[in-house]
Image (cartoon, rainbow, N blue to C red):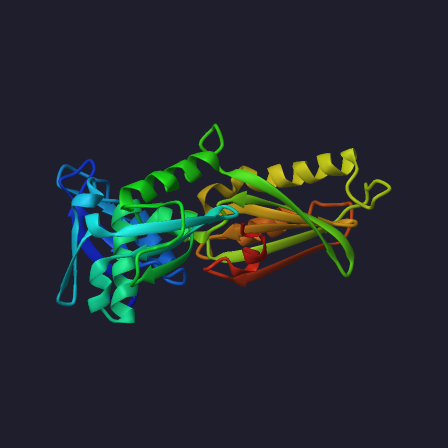
Length: 296
């Protein structure tokens, strides 16, 4: 409570230690930064204790039992139907015990069943709409929680690059100012780095353009030089998550740790750009709402 009043905690079995102390934001994107900063200051793990800011999946999810109110819910009795929507899975989860719960309890039970099956991180990164059901799901594919876990694993592996990093998706569209193209990482979600809570929008004018108004090969090389120069020293204090390009302009979307000087570093390097006007706008944005229009 001294760190933040909305944080929750629990003690779980550790992976390399006997026990794990988990301090979690319970999925609240506004609060996750406090849990992550707590974790980043934790001591090194030892034989007795390790530390985490996200709930890990349990070893045998179908053997778990959850008690909500006076109702005991065996995970093995849960049924899930899911639908892929772009790069996430929309989920409808049914349990026969839900009939004895109110809406708040059903939502809580659904969240906990998914957390203990997938872990908090995969729930945040790969699930879209989550709906508790009081009737068995009718959609397909469907199965038990272990079947669903395998579907999430397959999605995660599909969207993970060979080097273990994120994949990047290209998008395009029309705006009142003309055509716009965008490139964004997948997944584009603050759960990957919740301590990065300031959005830095770096917009640069581009002189080297082709007949379409978009960067020429020379312009693209100069943009990459700028991008590499910023990345060189950001380290864990910042990350490029997307960029948008329109006629004669590119906007880089960075997220940085507000407790560091990372935003000032981006501004400093941006000051070396000589092809056109440079603007830098910094806003506090823990849920990464500024890039939600590019989330796929």
